[in-house]
Structure formats: C-alpha cells, structure tokens
Image (cartoon, rainbow, N blue to C red; front, side, top):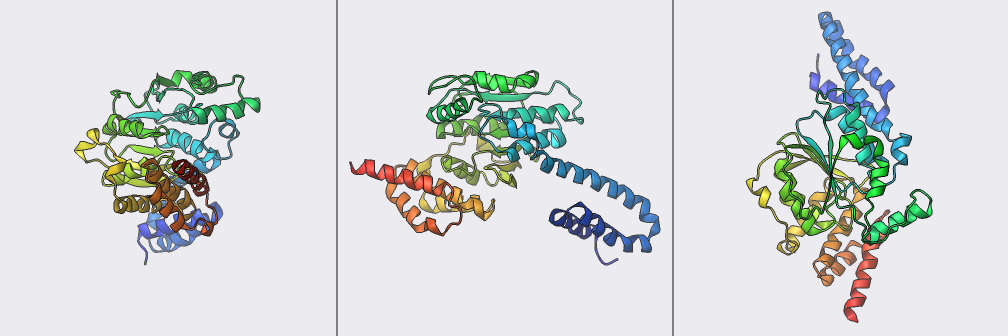
Length: 363
C-alpha cells in the first residue's frame, strides 16, 4: 500500500467537497480496495471507520442544509441565513457544555433563535438547564430606527420606533418560543461587568464603537477557555468597525483563525490561550502608525476570500476617517483604484462619506 491513512482521508474529503456524496463513495471504494485485497482482516475496522466518517459527513451537510431552512430565512434581523445556520449547527452538533454560550448584541433575536434552537436539539448535553446568555441595551440609534421603520412599512412589525426608543418588545416577540432558554441582561455593554463563568462560544455583534469594543475584550475575553472557545466577530467584514481588525491583529498570538462563514460578514477565531494582560487590554486608534495599520488589515485580508477584501479595505479607510486624518484616508482611497474591483462593496459607501467629511472640513 503506497498511501498513508491520513493521505487517503484528505483525498477522500477533498473529493466530497468538490463533487458531492456519490463521487465521494466512488473514491472511498477506489482508495480502500487495495487495503482490503492486501489485508482482508482489516475489513471490519474499515467498515467502522466508514460508519464514523459517514457521521461526520452528516454533521457537515447539516450546516449546508440549514441554509435553505424556511424558519431561519424568515427571522427578522440584519444577519444572513448562512450565519444563522452556522449558529444552530454549532449549538446542535459541536457545543459540549464546557462553558457558556454568550451573545452580545442580538438586535431582534435573529441569531438568538438559532442558538436556542440548536441548543434544544443538542443530544450530547446532559445538563438540560443550559441557557443562552444574551446582552444588549435594546436602544434605537438612527440606523436601527431606519431598519425598524422599513420593517414597519412592510407590515412585519406592529410598532414604529424612533432614535432613543427601546426595541426590546420586538426581541421578546421573536424569541418568545425560546424564552425559557434565554438569560437576558438589558444594559449598556460599554459598562457591563461579566462574572458568570467560562465561555465556550462568544458571538459578538456589538463592537459598534471603540469603548464598547475595549469593554468586551476586558470583560469577556478573560473567560474564554484555551483551546476550546470560539469567538465569532459578526462585523469583521464591515466598513464601520475598524477596531476589530486592530484588536484581532494585536491578539493574533492568542487566537487562531478557524472559519469564514460564506455569504456573511462573520469570521470565527479560536482562543488558544496566553497573554496574561488581556484583561487590561485597550486598543487606541492613535497607537497604530501607518505601518502597523497596513500589517493589521493585510492580516485580516489574508483570512477571507478575495471578493471580501474591498469591505475590509473600506474599513481601513474608515479608520483614518475615525482618527480625523482625512488626508491619509484620501490617499488610501485614491491608491486603491476602486474601479478595478469587480465588486467594490462598501468602498463606495466610505468614498461618499469621505467626500462629505472633506466638504464639511472646507466650509
């Protein structure tokens, strides 16, 4: 036999991802035939391995099948079906109860529901009192009011909301069937104190400003479990939240990249441990010079497919705007040559914002 077992396994799995289950079965038979001929006594072991691999394939295809789930698609929110499918799949198939599931910034609960749905279907968890720990202040800003206004006009919600209003009734309505699985903290994440215990999954959709981002790192990251915990940054591929790239670059020796959820803005990291000072970590935009900024955003781009790069580069330009350095923002924007991108994405949004800031500066 010329190939090692790991080599055969990798080749089989690659075949499955490329061409599907029937091609996979054909490759499995072709790969194992020489083994059976040479050592027929290995057949029972091979059958067991085949059964185990089938279970793994089933777990993998569940994630894909959930993307066509009508329930997930019908939830009200700003996340994609891919993200919702991943969250349900993780809680249903991978979560083992070594720590808590914590969600920061659920908006209307479109991610809370699949987290709860997956947890309810998880047969490996012996503790049936497991909950989803959810944190949000549920207060409308102008952007959220516009989103809710659109839903109101479409007849999808009954109430109209304005900046400053609490939209918690809409969260309660959408998550009502899972209320027994939710532990809710209604408060400002920029001042929250966390002391509930180890965290196995941290879903972050709340780093909308720098003080909140620093607070989340200080309060929640120290409770991550080395080698176990996942952190999902839902705003990783979004032009506004530039500090996420600075934070994850600074902490790149503490985290390893795991997965980019296709057709979404979410990137997943695993906490590998280390950096004792993480509890006191603070990112300061002014502490990043041009060279370090280049390195940070190059690192982020290396984690995702090329078609997602324009949004990350838009976030780099946004960083200079947030620092008040419009000259550097303009240089960055002009150097990119936005027209060369087939899908410029949020680069055009940031470009329009930069023009407006420049106009305001001149007047």
